[in-house]
Length: 268
Image (tube, rainbow, N blue to C red; front, side, top):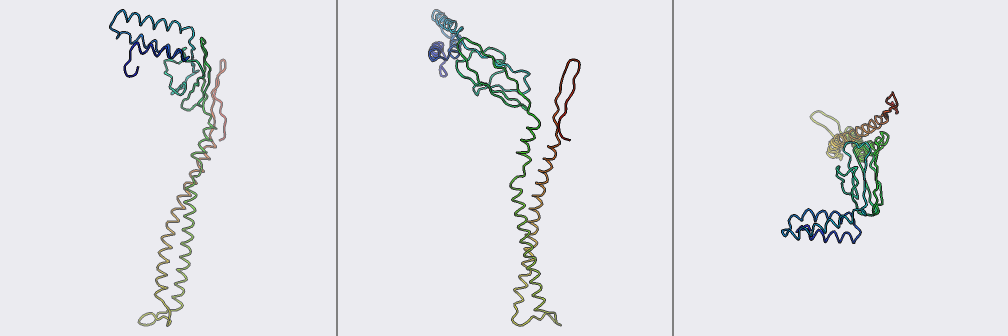
């Protein structure tokens, strides 16, 4: 049928679906046969094929299961599915022929809790599924936000830990730098015309050690301080988000005969 649509092929499909118990699919195939029948050139054959299709539809009509999906106060952006497939807006509220058996209806909309309903369709009966989407409560949204966006990420703790380690290492090199300076002062002294060091003392090694330790102290300390700062900023941002979420409130409108208002519940 997909490669070469024709009335004969549609009629054969209708018979196959009917014998398999797929009554709505058979009914749709009979409809397709009538739609394609205009392409049948022979007038007598065209009339006969149309009669077969209409007889088949008439025989199925009282047996067809039908499903009506009703959405109460449909919110903006609502999407309805039947067995995982989108349901056109034109079918909502209408009794649509559906094959017998178990079917699942789903509904979703921005800012609302998704829902699913199962329905069993039997021959000759119409079932109505009424859906009413509930708003997502502010507390639930806040809880999800805290779970996802207000949780301190692992990288912040890791970065802070690495930063503290680098700063600790920089302190070690600073202490070693001071020790090298103390050794130089203990074994060397300024004299007229230059510096005199004790015989056998390797002043060049301690001098290189002093310069190396100073460079490592500055480099590691700078990187470590930057890492700790980034971690503190991220942790503070997360904690501020939690405090903002805790101050939120829920507003619910209410109506009564001759009156109305807005109820607000929350922490401030």
